[in-house]
Image 1 (cartoon, helix red, strand yellow):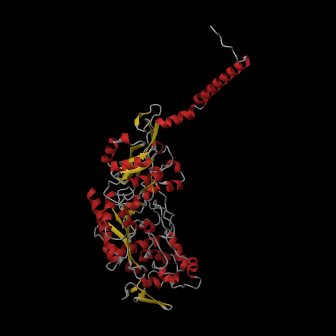
Image 2 (spheres, helix red, strand yellow):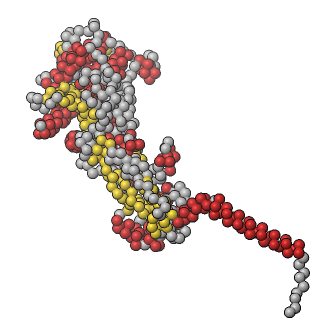
Image 3 (cartoon, one colour):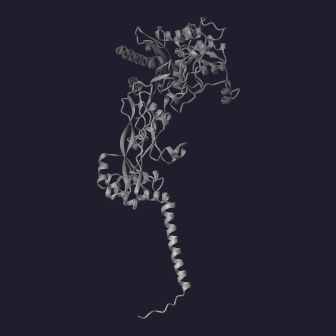
Length: 586
């Protein structure tokens, strides 16, 4: 057998052998790096391809009335999501899905752009899918890579009331909203967040905590089962909150105010609890759940009556005669003032070169402080301004809670305006106004502006002689008290007696509020506030003592005319409803 001559030297042999072992060593080291040192890193990447992480949305807490009746619930709906990294032909997939479920593909494309956050983060495509649409997606699941559906708890309003300005509404979290949040990591795009009312105020209690579920997927992104090594984490529902609202009272107030513009607030003075509150016009509470059409939304947004404005804590109004009890307190606190001295009302009063009129142009004749309150005479108060000055009156307005926030647990509250000499000088200049402004101020006109919730707080202070709690909607054992308002007993007694006469005297402006029930005692005050933008606003404020309980009430009807003629009869209806309800249950 012939042997070939070995032309390679021993050095070349050892060099080739060394290179071979070097390559094997590099391969082994690389294998060690991939399988041992970087196992976690590449394991996560592999799991990303085979495991889909699905966030489980937490149902928001329920909102209940004071008796446990559900005001706001959750309704399961379906949403369609996509995993961007699993979409091989995005545009074709969107067009196919749109055709399957019967919507415009541009809607899907716009939502994809709106909610996109990353290649492997679920991106919402469509919400509020019907069962029929889900069935069609299920039938075509093999043809839609990287697209899946899941349940989503949407806000639902099963009760017989709207209470839209109390409950508020939620909004979907988009990129702009998420970036503005302090705790943005707690929210994903497409989540809902409380945006107004109690939904916003108690967001941290209501929102709950997300859960997570892991699914194993095949090469086409289709779910093929659960991942045993990653157990699911259940979502934690939000906490339920109980409100002070009485469902039946709230419904009655909404019915009474239907077709009007204005506010009614009914509550319990000694606790500050609000049993019912209506701001009209209002809106459907499911406004932002996707059930309203774009046309309806634009109609509400551009409506001249501004139904989205919460009038009871944002609306600013001249109070008119309902604050004459503040002026009464100022007068009674002056040792030089005699409440029994009579002043003559001729129907008009000249001050400098101006003539100030009374609402009764014929005049009330001679009257003292008590009869001036009873008949709501303006001239009497014009003639008694010598007993106080502008800033002293402002001081008493502030003592009764005007010009500052009440602390109501509905955000967006307005402070109102309580003018002082500094305010007037700043607005008009030192010589741009005169003492004549005090004549308007003392009867609740001029620059003073209040919110209905401030008026409610004011009435509670009167009803409890300065010992009420701050107005609130959350039912709780303890609430924040008002700053104690200390006035002499004779001042409280005079005010309360005069407010009783307003309702029960034959010439009282609030006699139309009297339900004529022997076991109920009504205290009230009417107001007809001049409105520079239109017809006068009608006010009635007061409270009822009935069966060892007090019920305070504030009624404001915008551009409705006389408080005694229009607002007081509505108070009578509401008082009668409370009397009948409590009489039947006892």
